[in-house]
Length: 447
Length: 39
Image (cartoon, rainbow over all chains, first blue to last red; front, top):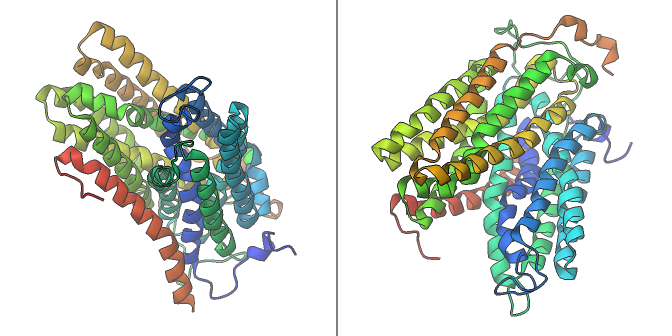
């Protein structure tokens, strides 16, 4: 029995399940660095010129492509390797994630040193992106198995860690680059190497302490109750069947619409508040920071609430409240109230984060916990699509609108469009029904 | 021993997460017209 095998990670009697969330968060807060990648854009775009972009330097757009590749690979690798992740167990997967993600950072450092753009794409985008996908789904199904009584809270903690990774990755990279900047270097390569080392240690820590529960394990003192919701099943559906059910695609639309509506704001937050309320760039940066905190807090808060309200109910809240808030933003802008605007968009961002964190528990409710990690992996493709759809809609519409109207009014039609996306998500969520029992696996087929 | 392991594990993640949150709070202060504490 290998140290990395699933069998080697089965918890011994007396193991505290509260050791598993730190293991999951230790991995997620590292791979969440991808959201903070933008801090490397300007330094990498003057890697040769040092103080200003020089001849032969990459453009910021060139560098940004690495981020897009990484996010696309996150979705693709999660979908492609999902079954392997379920078979191999969390330790082997976390280790594989660490090897891919950290070697991706090292290759990125080499790409900076040798000034090879293809190596940046291969390192950070391709190899690092695979590490992101593996690391994202690996701990989620393990956590849900340890917390069958509070699956929403459990996944909320891990996915909050991913949001936290952005808050750590950006400032950490900035501080390190400041330390390593010299007359002949922007310090990005050295910063990336140090980050690779720190992240490797943290992810290894997660891989070492993670455990899976023994077969048939239940939390002490837990009395199984009658199902309150018909949507929560005790049966299991295999991933290859699950993705062919209408429920999978309804949840795909739910996630895609929820993410598209939130990610558009997140990407345009700084210019948007400056255009709409004429605040200073420093205050706009503060607004971006506040939205990141809302995104982080919403992941834990809303996902935990879903354990009490139910997954379908909580998504109804995301979509209805989100649509009302989006629809009210043009009015708020007319009133000139920055405070109300910050509160409304902050609330929207909490529900954007909540949407990410609640979806694994929703999948578990519908398809059981047998291959929920793999099913989650396939559903994450909705995030990849939304990561393109949301910002594109926001960018194109705002640019087009600014040509024909004052900048402070250029965003109003976008907010109405976001309302439309949320209504589509709401309809899709309302259509979700329990999975047809013909798709359920027989007990003896789950070995 | 079990309590110590739990404490170590949670400290391992809360310290960097707390630092990240602190950085974001600092960054968001100008929005409320409050000057961030000089580093």
